[in-house]
Image (cartoon, rainbow over all chains, first blue to last red; front, top):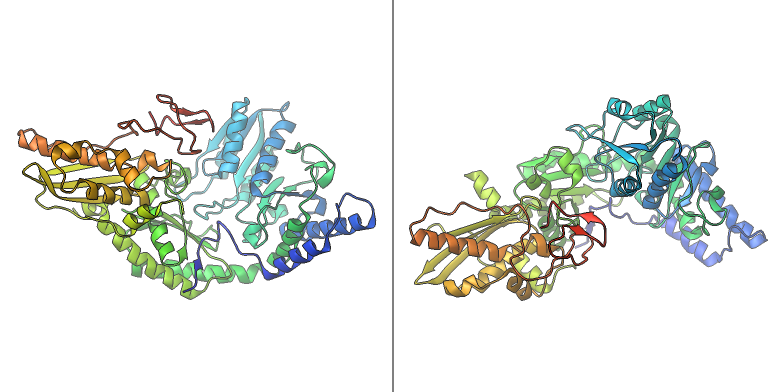
Length: 390
Length: 172
């Protein structure tokens, strides 16, 4: 039986068009795009074509507002630390939310250890930030607001345009970590009013190890990597041209096929949510019913633990992600799930199911059947389930 | 795979799962922070563990630890069973990932609680309340590792020097 990938939030397969373009690029033996002889100029043309394509995906006004990076983590670090360094004289206060990815959280923790002050705004019970809370948190020392577009654990999408409007009014730089949204849902930097936007290629079926940072023209942000004048002097180092070419093709494909991909995965998600009650009971859906990624469902199955579910589903040939403390390599329950008001025990039973264009309705049904078996086995072992039955 | 073959075998086919209805010793341990919970039921006759069963809420290694513990303890005298350590269980499983030594390796603790309960009942004491350990405790002499970066922790310090993480919540 074929293996079913229901963990697209962790990795997505490369599109055939992306693979072909990358293999062609490898075979072309491009020179350094910074070299001025003809072989180098060919490379530079490829680089700039990819930039145009990526800029088109997020509706950047100018291609040069796109800085290629090594992925979402670098983009986020660049944005957060780059603004902090650039604006150090203007202020030392940064506003964020309590559900950010660790790339943001740990960058901010690092800055905190260097004397910056961080205000973390709490999300409501549905997992969303209230833009008014952001407005209230901003002081005359605030240099940056950083809020994620969609959450990788719950799929919930934040009111970014409203927060963008707040930041404009208050004249504070706004960074949005849109790593799990760009190429998955429409992301338009003009409509959102962001100054900085982090994203990566793999969420839209491009290669890992390559991403981008959108820097609105005029936004002051220091480089994270100092050296040469590549990337408009914003990111030193010879470009990962093969990866960037792959990203460019993936971005073009995402722009052309976003609507149909969205409809396909949303159909699978709807099927899963509709049929789930026929297979298991006593679970919590953590994904916002309206404002969420079309391809992701976060569910907490009560009285059992997620890593055990993941391992048993793996034996059935199904890959899902779990947010249990154990499986994430820490002892603590996920800060995102706890922020929604979940108990530690319920957070332990959290699975993240994420669809891709390669999934079918049959995959959903096989998952549901496997989940039903797994939940029964683990609840039979669970002391919590026995206690709940009384 | 992060788990040994033995761990996966005990996870997939756990031994001695269930409840002993007329158990004469019950031990319950749990770590509410990471969520693992383990209950051990004993049937002790003539100072020997004739039967032992478990229920566990937890990850793959927590289930495997429970299963292995019951195999080790079954047929042992009470005195022998008291000497079983969490480390013995982990070694019988051909090792556990370092970060799992913290939260999942509670089997021997649950067994000792169950034996305590048995002895309390014999001596007419009130039945011991189920114990939930708020924090990881060092009952064995084994080394302790950071759950975030696997670096070895210094005894008595709730801070990981290697990754600069405050471990006050989960370690002491």
